[in-house]
Image (cartoon, rainbow over all chains, first blue to last red):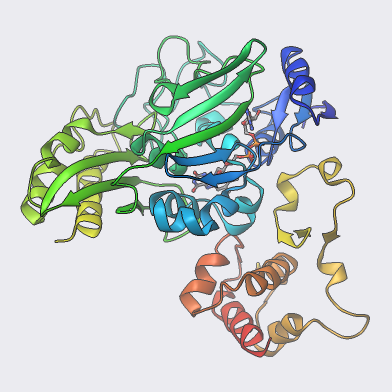
Length: 324
Length: 104
Ligand SMILES: Cc1cc2nc3c(=O)[nH]c(=O)nc-3n(C[C@H](O)[C@H](O)[C@H](O)COP(=O)(O)OP(=O)(O)OC[C@H]3O[C@@H](n4cnc5c(N)ncnc54)[C@H](O)[C@@H]3O)c2cc1C
Ligand code: FES
């Protein structure tokens, strides 16, 4: 680990000032400390923001409001979240481990960095870590990499399970800047690997995430997360599906579907959703819609299996949530 | 280890972030010569071989029991899945936690 300065802030103003002086925020530390030990991250100044007042969970008729410093375990176990937004509880509890979930914050989860082994190894070429150095993953060990939203610069999947659920539920992220607050729809928050790879998200330097909101709706109760992985627990997704359905009068009125483990950003599937709305729930509907899940996929040498896998993951989760 | 009674990974946090917090490690589990019931259960069930992972298993197991995630062997396995055991003592670790939870 490289030497670094450490300070703690307890007011938003102090955080913004420290952030403006290129301080790096730390919440749970489960991404940042890990990457600092690997020397992938080398911040000169780490700013502990755990003293900020972003720790509330409120559920109202309008929706869910979650402070950025709420821990993964707290949000998952919240009784109203479990009952009304089961997709969120499941996406959280199928990720990481009990210890990590006690530490990891919601803001940090959204901001977590790629898990690509070449990103984590400072001796490999990686455009994300070292822009312009190339991408060793593309023609290397690429079994875990993405098949959707990739570019010649980067093929790393987005690792967050929570973010997949948030994209499906149209969440909005609130951030605080020096000139006030702004809201970013989660769909626009994550940026696909383009020419400026340093930009993984639309947060400006020094802007803390303060909270996120998830709008209420008839679909949130009938929702859930399926995560398919190499081992049953404590592993990132090969493919995952977040599904929320509004079924009334024997017809699908609304559908939200997003997938993880296969794309460079949490991946919403509007065409799958369109194929569901207006149909009668049933095996035929689920199968036809899920067949569109991998549209546009560009597999690499070792991950073509993800095409069928993501289709089947979506189909199975539609069956689980919608009934067969 | 436990920080304010919650299990966390010591390797991923900075000590300076926990000033004033109540920190419990394996050294604080026994009361003098009297082993914690989970420590005794690890001995009774052969819940260890080389012992490398054991401090982490014990601290995590204590928290797992306190959280109530011990309804079945499957539930214990899922909620202990962050603690790897290179020797593969998992089956006996689950038995030790199961027994201790029942007697608690
Ligand atoms: C072994 C392991 C397994 C894991 N498995 C999974 C998994 O299966 N699924 C999954 O989804 N995740 C998984 N994770 C990732 C984990 O969920 C993240 O590391 C965690 O959520 C990050 O939160 P944190 O509070 O610890 O972030 P930190 O490490 O404190 O911060 C991470 C980044 O976010 C920035 N940041 C933090 N808070 C804010 C804020 N409020 N505003 C602006 N910037 C901020 C920091 O500056 C830093 O760059 C795993 C992690 C580990 C170590
Ligand atoms: S007892 Fe040897 S690693 Fe678990």
